[in-house]
Amino acid sequence: MGYDVLKAKRITLTESAGDIAEELYRNGFCVDGLPVVPPTEERVMRMIEYNKLDPQQVIAKEFEPSKGVATVEKIAINAVMAGCLPEYLPVLIAAVEAMTAKGFDLFGVQATTHPCGMVTIVNGPIRKKIGINCSSGAMGPGWRANATIGRAVRLMMLNLGGATPGEVDKSTQGSPCKYTFCFGENEEESPWEPYHVELGYEPTDSTVTVVGLEGPHDINGQDSKVSKDFLRILASSVTSPGSSNFRFVKGADLVICLGPEHAAILGRDGVTKDEAREYLFEHARVTLDRITEEHLAHRRKTPAQYGEFGDQPIPVVMEKENFKLFVVGGPGLHSCWMPNWGGPKHRMSTAKIRLPE
Image (cartoon, rainbow, N blue to C red; front, side, top):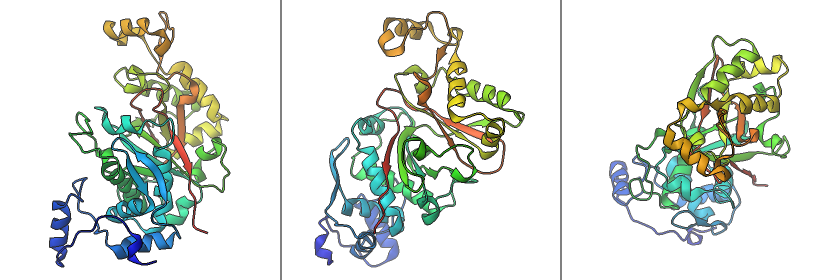
């Protein structure tokens, strides 16, 4: 294919590397505030041709909130700017499909005052193929695939979705999660089936799951060496009356990432994933004395939204299935939980990754 198949607007830059970085910034390319890889015709075409795709294939007709059209070319441009390798493109295409799927509130994630970032979770064999880190430091720096895929997702949210911070993105304080947030599930060290298999995909399938979440809140379980103790710590850790999961509980998912050592404790004691969810639903509840009178009055006026609770402690989610359990990370007795920003549409969305034949 020649470069004439690319339809994006061109700009002409000077040859100096320093000047290129500044020119791109002045032309609005560095929308996340960091320098970008210049998306030259050669780089963009290399990524598209590697994956044997039509540059003008439409992946999503409306990318909220500005309703930009997400073509393969536009996704590839953002991927190049983020520093992605060509083999990462199928992951990003699936992420766009998941973010724009019917029922997923992309508009809300983009425009809310809540500090949520778009979390991208990868399952299946592609994790090892492209080097997605699922072990120690999986949510931190140091791994190109994690860092650049997460950043490319954010760049698309800015460039295709128009979520300019302070204008469309109304997050009160923002969050480092809005720069990049991508990791894989540590399927090899999990006592349970991985998340995508739980959804009905084959173990040989690879998937991307997206959801708007806060950053990780640590759960230090160094003194919890048996399952009943760890589950008690886990349940009490997620019962924050100030979290949006609790304040706007209408069916939103709450994500818990278990460290492999904590997961091994549950597996050793024969605790299934569903049993863990059942325990959390019954015990991860907020007592009424921790809630303001104003909020209690609001809940009592809207039982259709919050359910009936009488004088009993209130669950942090509507159903046990709203607890989404993953195994992530490496050695150490640490796990984490990540609150959603609330609401029935604020659930996880998953799409299958299609690899080039």
